[in-house]
Image 1 (cartoon, one colour):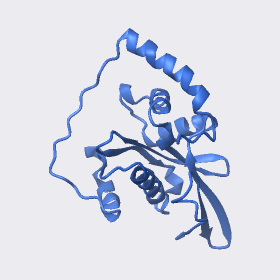
Image 2 (image 1 turned 120 degrees about the horizontal axis):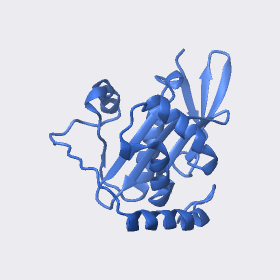
Image 3 (image 1 turned 90 degrees about the horizontal axis):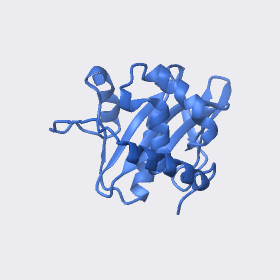
Image 4 (image 1 turned 60 degrees about the horizontal axis):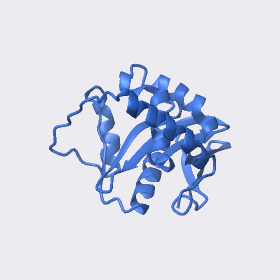
Amino acid sequence: TPCIWSFDGSFFNGAILIAKVLRASHEQLIEIRAYRERDKDGVISLWYVVYPAGAAWNQSEQVISAKLITQPELFFVAIREDTVIGTILAGFDGVRGWVHRVAVSPEQRRQGLASLLMRKAESSLKDMGCPKLNLQVRASNLEVLKFYESLGYAVEERASLGKPLKLGAIKTAKLRGLRRSNRLHCRPGYAPS
């Protein structure tokens, strides 16, 4: 059934987007907001379904921990009836923005939720002064290119290279320490200025 999305106006001005999904005779509310610790199990479950064969450096627990250290305000979840149904991680290095882990629950696909998550990330990055957003698509998932092209993205003539970096024991210990100290600052509802 096609869906109609309506917004309460907080999308571009606040940290939370409330979308009403109108279907046939009933209405569902979907909240898009910054990740909170209570979302962890739902995020891991969703990623297990969407990304079943993740690489060692993409293990869900590690991705969540790392994101909570670096720009946690750019980790968004879509929630319906207290269930995580979508995610997006964004980042900005001062020159370019990136998105990662754009995930939508299979039963929620083709209803506009991924577009809303992308718009939320784009809006947040734009507010930070980000002039351009990049993303990568796996060769095994090229059918998603049409989706991104519908949002205004274009395939660029680039070669994507990657190299897993092994963190030494000292760096790993520092990250653990940062995670502990970060808990004081990144509680639910925390919004850095």
